[in-house]
Length: 487
Ligand code: CMC
Image 1 (cartoon, rainbow, N blue to C red):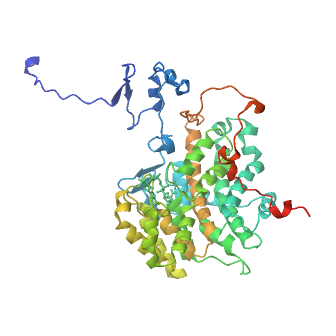
Image 2 (cartoon, protein in one colour):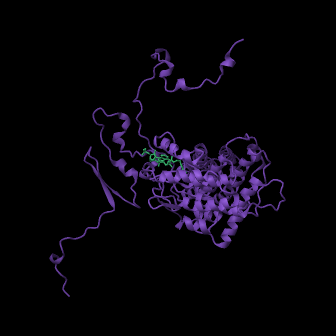
Image 3 (cartoon, rainbow, N blue to C red):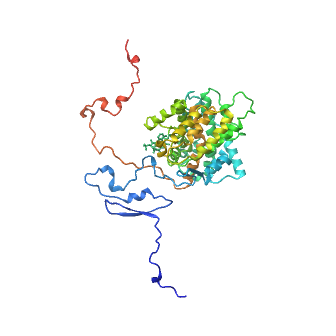
């Protein structure tokens, strides 16, 4: 058959769009084409856009050295490519390694989910048995570390104890320290990496229980390897004079296990990105966990569950809700447990957590603050201030109420967030080191400070009142007048 001549081809040929963007630098007219991969562009591509200094432009702008991308608080900058967790913030969807969080919460266990996060697949039965056995047999903490933890004050915030214990654990594991063993330690010795993973998971619960026991001035309880992860945590916290056959209430252990699944990972949040950042320097994993936990401790992140209860207690009763919301809208208060950087419609974890709350209230009785919490949530969700900003309850809004109903002290709540999150930290740490592409995290800055100037000796400097110095007059005088008064 004769081939039709090209003139028969319709003129409106559909051109497939290129998967790239073209950026034109209007300062120079230079244009660059940057490939889009996985809906992202490398920020380094823009460094090709260089220009001479404009008339009078500050030298510190570094203009001839390439354009910088400024993104304070990382609103739209990805720091890694990851295979671990995906969040669709617009649809309120969360999945780990492809499995929706609702299915994991309903059907998995914390240790199984931890395995999935860290190793990428659900474990087989024998893998799960071995994994659980290893973790539950790495729950013991050395006697010296116990001594150190015992020295902490009874009223120390349990997160300070947790962070300090992990920082100290680095000193107890020289064989796991790249500073001592060589920077390629975890590239060459994957067995050692796996050993630190089970040790860290096992010890996280033990250290958490110790942070609680010093609070109540009781001896530490040795861990039990025949219990589940959350049963063992509750056992170590609560065991007193009961016979050794004592077991925590299985319904509460189950509720805590579900909460642990919900908290196990949440991609590049403040603390996990800290883990990745600190881990990129190749410091040992115990120091990384201490750093990540410190990031979680703050009230805008893992400390929010504690802050929610303090807020609800301050509100006190349902009739005070409108007055409190007015102060929030005047930006005099923050509505803790509301809002999220990524979720814009709903936090899928908070739906599951409401069901866990009912499970716990059935055992422990209803938490009285729940009435205030519901009234506050309902009023906020009907208020334009919150709806227009897409603010709704996040996981911390409800988790604090559950922990309070279970009788945990307020300042222990962030510990109940960080213990399960250790699984996510380790998954990201391993992913980064296993990628073979680790590069130290080192963000750039845009310098807007003083231009170069020459040092002036103190005797030649202009006299200034103390109050002119930034904040110096605000430094409190620690030596009381009483002590300074001469007889
Ligand atoms: N209460 C009152 N106003 C809020 C709140 C809140 N909780 N969250 C955000 N806003 C306002 C904010 O002031 C801003 O208003 P405007 O447009 O007038 O300036 C607007 O909503 C947009 O907020 P944003 O500052 O862009 O939010 P962000 O993404 O920087 O911060 C957040 C996210 C979670 C830190 C913030 O919502 C917050 O402080 N929430 C309370 C603390 C909290 O519950 N943290 C737990 C987060 S979930 C668990 C976790 O992952 O740690």
